[in-house]
Length: 383
Image 1: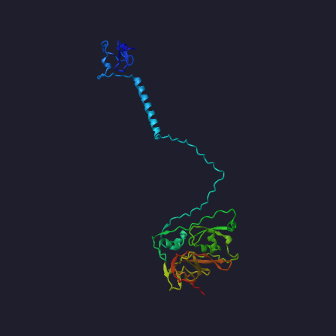
Image 2: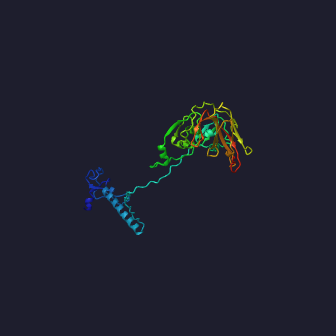
Image 3: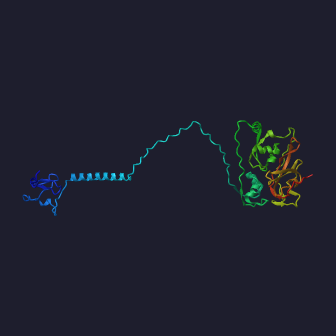
């Protein structure tokens, strides 16, 4: 297009598009032209800037295209410059996750390790001392030793108690139950074949009296009933093993039962009395329960509760006094606690060795304790 023809076009002030001089609006953006036709042969004043420099106007699509081109060229130059200076970081390849192979269990089962069951530890029981209680009777009730009660409560050697005193009684020693065996032991076979009876303990009964009345050794009754002392509780059911009986078949038995004598009253020594090295003899005394018959006597039981073995002496006398044998005196240099009581008995027969067998003929007296000290050395012997 010649310059003469360009002089007859007008420029859209909105988008810069040239339109015919006679156009009323821009064909691109729709701008309305309101200016009059300039004089012939002269440039329009809108085409020149105030300084005389030509004014260039770009269309919108062209401006966007030039901007994109500038961004692309600038990015390429930046990438080229960084690659020449070794400052361009290489992308780090992220390794893909690899599935871990699962272990296949073997067919051999694990053998469990056998562990021992811990022994249960139980706290001591509380017991309030009642009238006529002694350390020996309390120990028998809880099936523990007198020495354990003395140590647990820091008592003196006499094991002195008072009514209302609260004692801490230790639990008996735990005995694990033996595992069952498919083969019967000799003892189990004896139990299976033994003829037994049940004895219900009455008031005043002791294991020694029960043993004598049935003609069965005291040790056998203790073994069959799992007992460790001579104490029996009212209403307790005891197994009497007749297969352990030691009576002679033709034993002489008194046909008339002994009368129910009252309990003897203990006189000397007083409960808790102590004897030292200067006392060579300890004499026990009690009141009479009445006129005894020919086959009757007083049975005196003395137990050394400090020894831990419940060493005892059981003797029958017709008098109301008894001197403790010198063989009972301790020889370890320590004071020992002795418990004693008396019960009327009647002879009902003899055993296989010709010794008399007694049955209880009255109530058992209350028990008392005394302390006896001895020198360190062998116990004295009686001739």
